[in-house]
Amino acid sequence: MILKAFKTKSNQKYINKLLSARSVAVSNTKMNTVGVILNMSEYSDFESFRMYFKGLGIHEAKTKIIAFVEDPKDSNVLWDTYFNPKDFGWKGKINNIDLQTFIDTKFDVLICYYEEHHLELDMITALSKANFKVGLTNDDQRFYDLMIDIKPKEFSVFKTEMKKYLTVLNKL
Image (cartoon, rainbow, N blue to C red; front, side, top):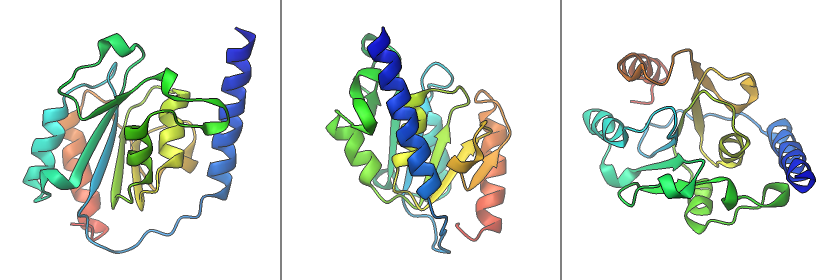
């Protein structure tokens, strides 16, 4: 139990280090590749994201969706990639190859579609090499370039707001 607390503290310190070193340099390029991070306890409809991106003209091959599950037994083989707390080591070490690949991918836009605070979700967001990060309202504003203040269940509102902001920012 004490080791778990030390591990959590170690990872939180690593996240703070990443966020303080983050330089915001958003490019004006059009959105071609998209990554999505979901928390399965808040929103689990992968297909709604796929349909939304298809409607925006983004090919399915250019999108990647990953999901966080508390318990690996709750995972579904139909999902793109899932991860759980066991995929993280000390000082930000990632023990999942698929997750590391997702982090290293330079997405044009990363959508962090979760509201609950989880160290693992925050770490993936902070580690991501994405150019433009969008998230739902969070306590720490250093994570995102754009925050949309909605609940995860309000996906139709999210779609409308996201399209509006992406158009204004010349990403579509």
